[in-house]
Image 1 (tube, rainbow over the protein chains, first blue to last red):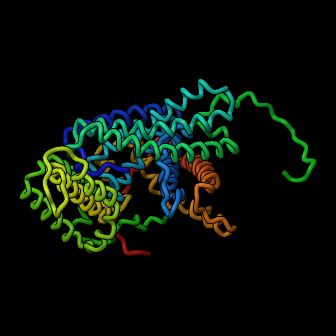
Image 2 (cartoon, chains in turn blue, green; image 1 turned 90 degrees about the vertical axis):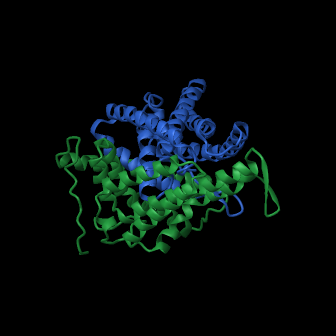
Image 3 (cartoon, chains in turn red, yellow; image 1 turned 30 degrees about the vertical axis):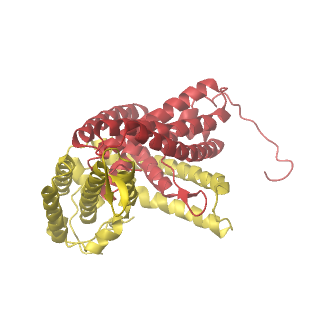
Length: 231
Length: 232
């Protein structure tokens, strides 16, 4: 998934690097406003969670498996600012300590997966929430749709970058077709996992889900009788 | 994760490359790779020179070549892509081993493989010779925003713990007879991930409180540059 060195030419890599730095700087400011001095430990632990989550294999069929990318998931769980920070840090550590993704392509990878992936995922999530009824049960499906579209959105931006600074003579249409087709499939898996994970967190700690804020405030404490045995 | 342990790609050593300051190594890696990426595909002697230079650095680091080679699997997806490139690229066709392929595609595939391989080996050399703590101190010296370095530090420090949490959950799942093999098990796996998120987030809250009780006001004390100590 990670773009390696030499895929895009140097000017494009530097340009996406500048975009990435600007985006991360904005996210830093936003996250600090929301979390103040909790930013470092919380974003750090959530980044560790995303990293570990990417290691979990979701079996598909015939011995193959896929894994989560986590952009939309992080956006819905901790908000777009902290989400951008977490994914960016994960990508930086992967490039520096695991040689996963080229070091000159780090800006490209952050732009695609942290900025486009998180922001597109969150924007779609918010838009879908506006359409769906204002209920807690709308959050997980909205997150799934956000995840579904965030992956092809990143693929679309990659195709555009490749058309501008790609180091191979492949027509834009061909790249776009292959990237969108393949990433729509990945997006379906991403959507299923994101929706399920968000749903499971909502069931236990809805207060932790950033995207669900304001949707469960008016619930009343109810005392339930335990007749009928242990629930 | 104790303080003395290296991350998985780290190869313990005391060579010149190991002892070089991390910020210089990062700068060297970025500079080297920018030059490599900016080199036109047909400048074959330049690529040979880069390879010799890189090999020199690897040999100087005394990291076994096999150690690096085994970790080059991260490159696999792009090897596949490069292999396909001559078939899908545009431009005049040429014949190789009885197959009709695109000539510019072939050139581009060769350049891509060369550049990506140089990048992977160079990055692996940095990873193999630099401890995570040194890297963080190096990034701090490179004026990477303090908060980013802090987040990275927490991530690196707690990754083994969070990954261990996940491993134990999956072990518990298997020991209860559920071996996830098909998409049918996705809801189960996703619930584990949800639980992992809650655990991680709550751990972050506890860490924050623990930091406050030790006088945290937004910045961590200066990270001491670790010296290579004998293992306790």
